[in-house]
Length: 147
Length: 457
Figure 1 (cartoon, each protein chain N blue to C red):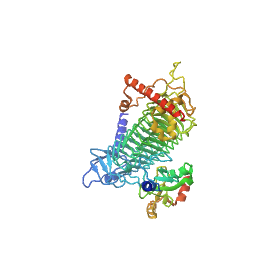
Figure 2 (figure 1 turned 90 degrees about the horizontal axis):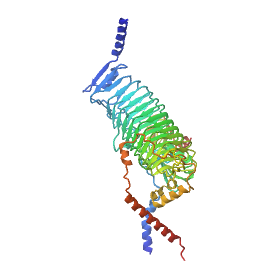
Figure 3 (figure 1 turned 60 degrees about the vertical axis):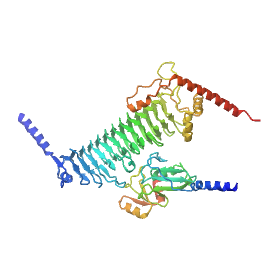
Figure 4 (figure 1 turned 90 degrees about the vertical axis):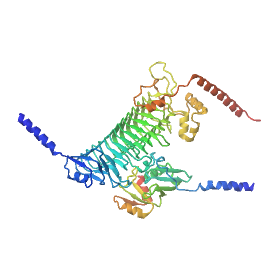
């Protein structure tokens, strides 16, 4: 009996591991933005969030993700993790709260949020040289886009 | 008098002679850019052969004519052809080799800040953006073929892309394998007619923040979704065909936050969802055909004052679906193939209202996984019961004057769809057999349920 319990536990373990928090993936070209219903195709501006319950939502623009929470489709305190696509590494999701941002008309994102995220400050500095952009952090991005 | 006339004609001729035609034939050492730079305003440059000297720039009003095998190859440097002057015509070229860059919007033909450009009868071969108009007035884009790279749509940008333009005409083009076939952002007072948009990754046609535009007589087939009209006002949509746009998030037509639209005489066939209406006001949907779709119409409860009249709903899995109860919209005089009423006064309209919103439709909207019970006996029984004694379906959602006969078809159906429509007629023998099986199943179900209800001691 005991051996069977152990076996059962062993079988269950991979399933439990998979419950841990992972970076979500966006199925580009097929996924639908949870906020604006557009197909998510632009690998440079995609975003995603994970709720406390483990549910994942994907967005085609950071502005959609911010509006989604502002409008209460998911309550602020239910959000466990925020992700954005790295503009320098299209399609790669990074932690939104620590990313480095640029805002400006030089970036034409699908829903006109016009905010690009970068994993490191050096890449951001390189993109900022193009002009017409304003550096931001996560808090100011949320303020800017929530309007 | 006669002399005067001759003098006048001579003057006209002289003016005409002023505009010269330059002939450029590609050979080692020749440069099209130098010919263009040497030409005067109003001149014509006839190009023959392959031009592969990198990005070509046109900064004065010229007519560029493509002659034998005229091809402009940008060689992967920036835009293949960049136009920055008023009244430039580009006709009859093959254009390829624009740089692929997400940061700089590189394109086959880019037109910047000018008016009166004509882009006609060109072939755009695997350019990143194909035709890109930015800040252009009175443009005509006609008869072009725009082909992206099959299987690599992810890395293609839009086929015909307009940004902050007005009074443009996009006519009789064919666009395939791009991200969006035609994309309008901040474009006003423009017309899109007679185009064919196929196999695009996202949308066949996409409007964002664009007002007072019309699209008519186009065909949108097998795109991620047919057409998306978002955050726009006063858009007219007539006689278009939305075919085979399929997938979990695929729509024939997606309307999001738009006001005052007219959707008249279109055909929606073989789509996952025919029309999705989300957050729209004052949309008039008249004389359209919805056939063989999964959902013909998904009307969200946040839509207000939308009017549905004279539409044909036939062969759809669900005719109308909604996600709430308050539906301040009107629905009258449509044809429903599910209508089972009668017409005693013979005025051509049914005497009892038709409620297109079934019990199962509502269930699926709330619990999508309930779809596994689609077309099951139990669900069809529940649906029938709900139809007799409505308790869940919203009262306002009904057609008081359903048409008894099929309206005259609008001639928008192509052969492919007619092929679908010609379903084999059920032969009486098999129908009888099905009836018998159904009867036996019902009796079995009743017996089983009695068995379940009888209390155990």
